[in-house]
Length: 193
Image 1 (cartoon, helix red, strand yellow):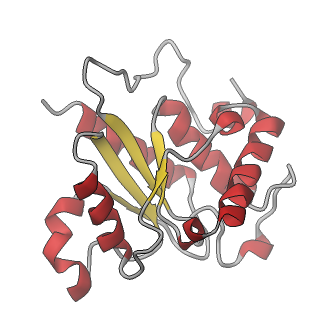
Image 2: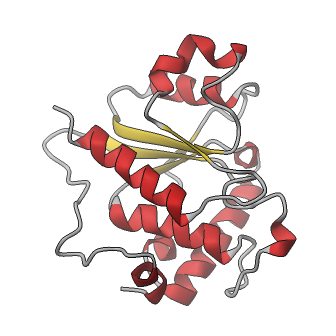
């Protein structure tokens, strides 16, 4: 197990709950934003030791989620989804951390994207994807620094998003605390009958 995951208190794989597939095709989905999540807006104050575009602390936290929720699928919900070169840049940044420290970021990829032609409220874009893929989703979270719960724009779908949103602080990005909260939300959803 890589030293960074040990440092944040990840259990040994024999103890770790798995996102095990049953006879259904339902999967654990992570909707991933980039700016303010993996790339803090005050990024110059955070460092990457592996040459990634993203700082170590956000990649360590994201790796922790993927380590604990083995088999989770990533749906890119960021505006970075609209250009192939941006998507490749994200994958290269994630994998550079994996090459340096091991773990699930070594082979990470996107399962899907929210609709690249749909631009507006992030909550609406994610909801659209969920509506188009109801048979694929067993558990899901949205990692985002944008408001997905509050405000007039989000009011109509607030109940759908309750218990699925992990809101990061834009100037800090994803933290280990956010990662543990994410894992808890997903495990709670997976344990529901």
